[in-house]
Image (cartoon, rainbow, N blue to C red; front, top):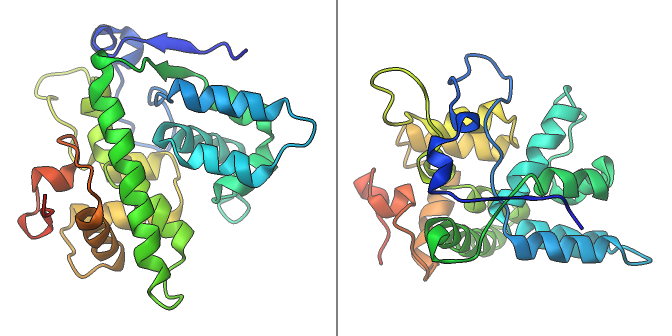
Length: 242
């Protein structure tokens, strides 16, 4: 079985490993993003099958925000050249190997109980918005790749992770993470579509195609999350109809 560390998010706010300097360079020194235990279990079970269905494994990963981010971070570390770096989860698993992806995803898991309700809520919300964004993109006549729209929808609340997971920055006045979504996307060398959305969101570019897709997908999604920036209405024009 995977040697996964089970974390308590309440206690995690005081762990020294979660105290970090906000990087001024692309070195990835952020804590691991937790992955749902059921995702890890299903991934491991599939990995022991005689013939692994790569597409099925990819769909398991794509249902979990943490697993997607952990594997994309691994791809960024392994491929310095952006031109050679895989950006589709299916390609990442194929290039990196199933065991490497399992190890990356299994660094931390979150207990499925009420203590971690914020994580479970945001993960479920992100998955539903992602599915809605893929549907929206599929109606756009090929101008936007549905799978890219899915990734953008899944990671649209990326900037809320530091506060949600209790990541802390030392020093006075460091109570909030400004433009965290953009900084994380750039530091982790996430796919260009994710970076483009994060930058456009920070700049309140309402006419940006990614922002528009997420806005529509967010309105379609039935499951809301108080941890989501769009729910909080940081940009009033983007506040979803709940």
